[in-house]
Image (cartoon, rainbow, N blue to C red; front, side, top):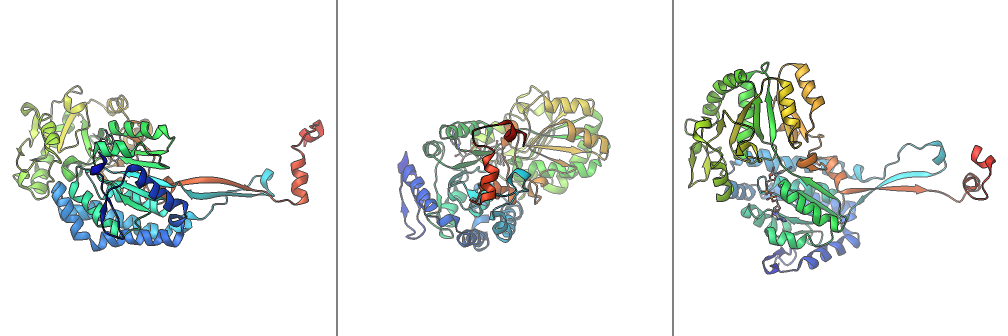
Length: 471
Ligand code: NAD
């Protein structure tokens, strides 16, 4: 129902209703008239985005608190500052990235110009998820604007305060033709996906990723799919158990486990499990106090549906730590489950909440087989002091990314591509890779009309002869 679609016009600051075709036409005209490609214009856009993050910092934090009860410090360090840092780096570097590249020439092209032009794709659709509603919409936007595209952004309807802020306020910082925000849920996204885009960047679940991929295939639109899945943690007996417990429990409970690269389950021996649980009890107290559901550092579960889904995973006889909840606040205390079987419901889908099951395995080889028997995860975490074990996991498993002896942090490490593989996604971004994601690498070969060039070319023209072939 397109009556619900809201597109905010910056210049007039009036809210006008447009059809999906009108939204895309506007973006395409802006791209075709060359506006978004201009380097100075791109710089202004990137600076506009940075100004939004700086000037509206408090408003953004308020919106994230409203949507997810996110602590200000977490909003700043895990969302706003991550995008701001990417922006500062991109503003400094993107003109260099945009220049044509001159790859090394082989003898056959010694007389030619051989170049790679960095062309923007055109009209880009970015569809975001609700769990990091700033990071996962504005993160890709940095690369898309730097590369010279015009962009249509669709934030998640499940983080409405942030979505409204992007539609009503961010639009005032950016060009109204080259940047538009559309609001809506499944129905509106389905409608907009019927239109032809030049690139689609989607962040969300694997199930919806497949829908987006199918819609894109109708127009042969290239896509980046940033999806989810179950990210395993392997804990080896050689690990420092106190630090392991702190790093795993922090990573699992950041945003109440509603993080795409959150540790989803632990693989370890029974002996390691006992040592881990001892430390985990202390760490829970240290990080979240004696009644974690009252802690200000615990985010709320995004919807009632997700809250009920998560409570179903908590079987009282399997709770080693936690298991408490506050239905009014939609908060669940950090929970560790033991005696879990690989067929239990909690192991059959991405948990996406503050619940962490432990599966007992007997050896690192068994852990590797366990991981490889399932879909390729977005992240893998290995805790060990033993270099052979580290190498074993790195060489014998496939995942979007890996962090050894920590969780989450590879996502904020500059110069590391972030993305999935297999069911956890395709494509990657951040920094220069974000720019490249939204850039078509156009092959350009330039010949001249000089006599010696024509002489060289004469070899390819009929009539053919052995003399020509031998040369
Ligand atoms: P989701 O797939 O339900 O929704 C994502 C977006 O798709 C939203 O904007 C939504 O409006 C739209 N959408 C939902 N259903 C649709 C449909 N049928 N047709 C068209 N569009 C539709 O995901 P979510 O609940 O917002 O996020 C949670 C999932 O996203 C988890 O699986 C998580 O692991 C994953 N995720 C991945 C990353 C990453 O960077 N790889 C980051 C965050 C979240």
